[in-house]
Length: 281
Ligand code: ADP
Image 1 (cartoon, rainbow, N blue to C red):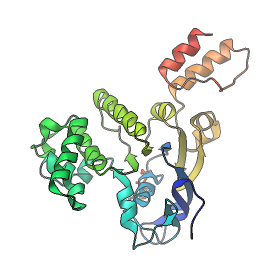
Image 2 (cartoon, rainbow, N blue to C red; image 1 turned 45 degrees about the vertical axis):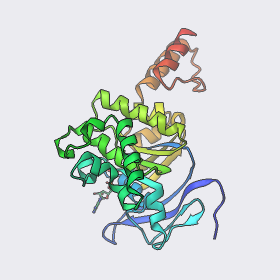
Image 3 (cartoon, helix red, strand yellow; image 1 turned 180 degrees about the horizontal axis):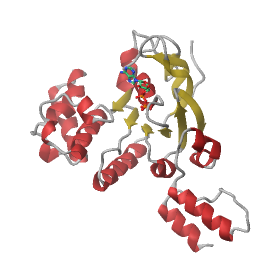
Image 4 (cartoon, rainbow, N blue to C red; image 1 turned 135 degrees about the vertical axis):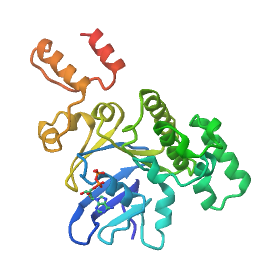
């Protein structure tokens, strides 16, 4: 049976339990379009990683349905989902298996049984893009946390998935590596990848995402635009989320000088937008 067209990924009534008793995902329903930039927020244990691992076919719940390009995912065709949706683990050590950086980044391509020349070409391209070429012969465990994270990301993007799931990608990155990650996101966006990122960084989510999904205790409690999410005191309180700094400053200035009219139509999303808005006040 086909679903409504237009969605790259659709999840219907998905439940997931690790022990066949307690659900860690409760009746998840999501429709995701190609090219969307989605941030998933929620406290530790809310179910974000479990949802991602269902979205890329590592876990296969027998309760609920997942459709990729309107094709229902079953045990028989689950490799289709695994190939289309790349998952970057929060901890690179959970993901890295190769004995060299080159071996790690080419691992997935080798599994696809591509011709050796093509594997080499694609791996070198990604190593260069990720600033890892000079490390190619090194064992990954000799690298710093940030470099290992880049290796883990490189291994996933080498496979050219159309959906990329990043699990707390910035949690262990220094400012230089964070900037590099944001530059990579821009490149992936230009390639029209669908990008889904779990994060605790509400400043980043506010600035980057087109859509925010908030999870609490295995449930999706909100799914809306950043401005709608971060201006709902109820959602912020329930999911224990901090309001993005830029929005706080905007509200304070509006309150003082805005004749008590709190509209969010022009609320700045990044520092440049803020500076422009402020100069026009
Ligand atoms: P988040 O990514 O939001 O921190 P997780 O998906 O990691 O949340 O965890 C959701 C719940 O599932 C938590 O209660 C966690 O303890 C539990 N959990 C996660 N992984 C496993 C596992 N492999 N086995 C059993 N329980 C797990």
